[in-house]
Length: 102
Image 1 (cartoon, helix red, strand yellow):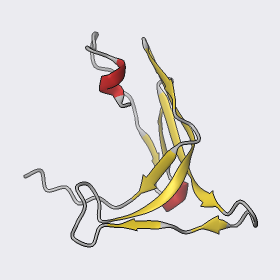
Image 2 (cartoon, one colour):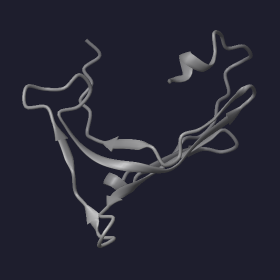
Image 3 (spheres, rainbow, N blue to C red):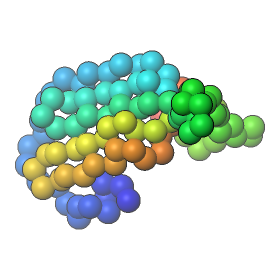
Image 4 (cartoon, rainbow, N blue to C red):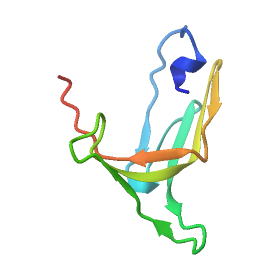
């Protein structure tokens, strides 16, 4: 369930905050101090503990991305006013996105 499933409306003024980003494939993450933190971790083989490199590829082109590395959220928490959720340990993807705004 996305943000829209949690809240029917938002109130208050916009908060201008720095977004910290670490773009590093399946080890990427981003945060906004005092509001949210998200970090990816690679999938691990449950027997050997080694990293598994798994891709989901859309040969004809995907809606958002064409080739995504699968990962897990080691942390994905949001706490801002009434909006609070924790999706840590869930499915995640890292992929380059080409956005034309067309």
